[in-house]
Length: 152
Image (cartoon, rainbow, N blue to C red; front, side):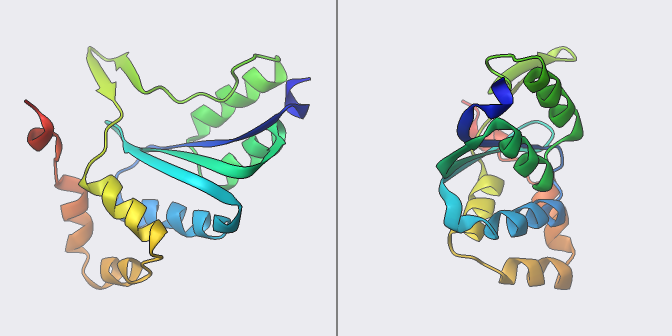
């Protein structure tokens, strides 16, 4: 059964660019930092993808539980659960690019992803305090569009 197979990849799909919501996810990830080898964060059209690589393999059902506890998108969770129960070989998937509603959506690095990574690496708890003290920072975070700088 695929649920008993081992994996070390925790894939999160967070469908919001709201800084407070993402800092909640970061706060939860900080609690398991001792078990993490590497983290990659990419911005998508609707939010962020987090690729978390653990330093030990766990059963697939445990990986799915961790994803749920770290607030992954509920639709991704239901699809992954269905794949896992039906013994799909690749049950845990995040798309690097996809075509939906007449447009392409791609993962990319941006100023937002850099801020989120730094908040993990240096444990910048002051970001939480800044957001609650200066709510306009959340608006800047939400509205800033780094795509224009990356286009050629």
